[in-house]
Length: 319
Image (cartoon, rainbow, N blue to C red; front, side, top):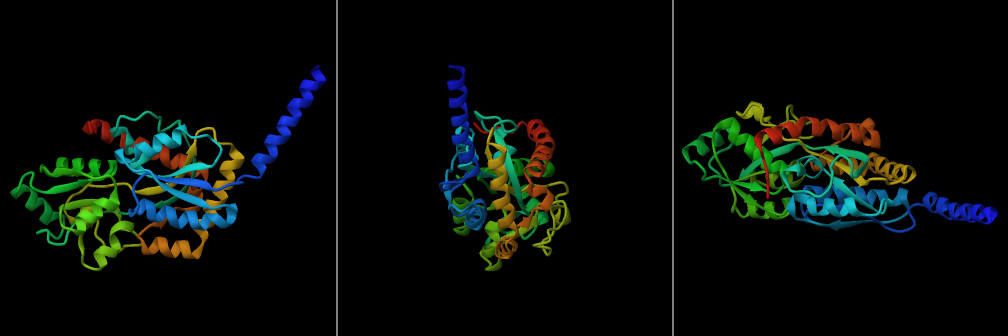
């Protein structure tokens, strides 16, 4: 009997081991936690296509919008930890999501795969807005309390808007959207006044004069958009927003599977065509050491340690 049990166990192990070694044997789903058309969707599609060859399987994009990306996050957290479901995460979904009533743990329910990029966040205005920089914006808001509309398409936008109000003693009216794509459509239609958005979404529109860029909300100027002044240079010191993209899998995803996904990601980020497109979109490729699972884990922890005290002190909540 003992020999039979041992033989059965070895047979089961023999079946499982090759399955892990052969990963992936079917398409991998990359969940984008926002609707099509935004910077997250654009970056995801570029990387997904470049990961196809090293994985030997398609990486299929699935857009799951709503609740600041937390609906998609909950789905990933509940997915089987087999490597066939992952998400493109960012500050909004993996740090700022605590402003929403979430059912998952941002620190325990996800396995880092690798950091993709660090992204300049831009403050933009509709093309007919009366201010051309942050100094003019503050003057306009003080002269028209609560009249300026501010797009609330994700956690980062909400936190940035609240910080701007606190830093300037002004008020805005938040207008909710399900993602950067629909929000940008409203901005192009001049239905809203202000928006905080990643450079990937707005540079084409700005270059054609369809929107105004008021400032780069980074502590220092970006290498990919060096001509854009920072918030401090433009009139609001300390008004920063954090932007980045990284891939995450559900917790307990096997290390060999994570290693294969990471290797495909690293190869994709080294592709000259991907690097060129990221530069066109205003996305700074992450340093090589941060492209590893350990690099993203350390980066993610540092972001949480930096921003959660700010969010909690400001008592920012979305019901």
